[in-house]
Length: 271
Image 1 (cartoon, one colour):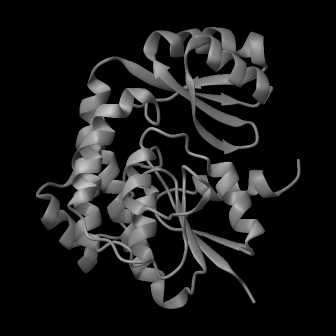
Image 2 (cartoon, rainbow, N blue to C red; image 1 turned 90 degrees about the vertical axis):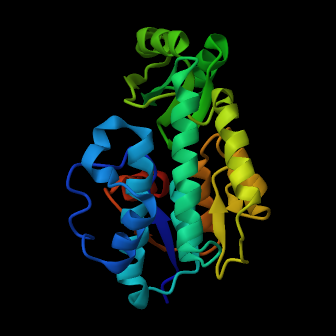
């Protein structure tokens, strides 16, 4: 018997045309009506548009396939946590969309000042990457898979990590095209706004466990953890390992792209 976990992607998985398989679906169309604008028309603008767009694709993908899936767990990468909670019936679709919309606005505003960024450190020595981050005043924002750490913080420090990363850690630094230093202390204003929105939002007990990025374990306090996760590292590698340890042997990615499936394979298949 297969034990399936649903996986939902986060910001960065967007691409032009990703909405085409979902146009006309009632849930997708309802989401556009609730938003009051079409985020797919201006994806290149950034966080404000990309987050609700990815969320709409993800929940519609789940709705299209839900009759053929009986998941035992779910997880989402950062933004993807909201789609995972909808799939588990812990959040109503309309409430989740409102939260995602406010989260996107708050993160875009927080990213505007002070200037911050993110850099993926691909390969290399993980301990050396963490040491360089500490020296430069950066944080590990994402632990995505073996050999893939993402650092976040002030833009000047990110630029220094890009310059020094290869020589000092053996990693291949790749600056990310994002508006700010997500999952770092620079997102504190956004976390406060999100916490206020979460306090107004009703939640239900999930039908199956949804794993939190911040703990790599099932959510316990949804409101507190969702707000905290905006500041905390995305512990995706540990989340995948925890799901596998809890008996999951089938990972089903729902939404745009195939990034999470590749991270799962990198995490679970020995090098």
